[in-house]
Image (cartoon, rainbow, N blue to C red; front, top):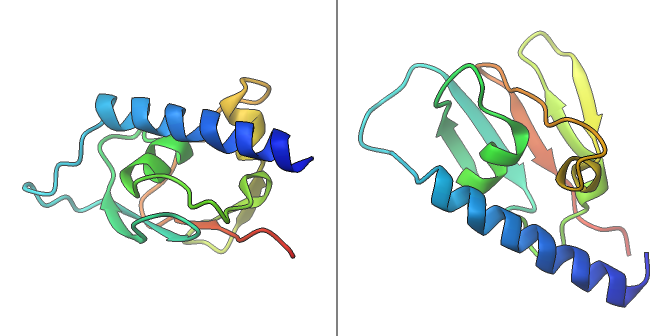
Length: 116
């Protein structure tokens, strides 16, 4: 992906995250027993409460305030409590080529950095 295309992709992804943030504002007041950890190249890594059985990867990244400029959106890794590892291309999710994935209690969403 060329530099200009990457910048446009990041701009579109930032817009989508902003829209998701508006739709799913953070609610830290009520403790939940079901959580997901979002780590790596996101603006606010941490543990977030799952809002429902239907919380998706993009929603969890939105809760973490979106991707950093150095994020590799094509290799987002989800690790389940049972050790199962899943890699998704967030670009394909954001463009509608593949469906978003629902998260489970205890999942870890890891956003890697771009290779240099």
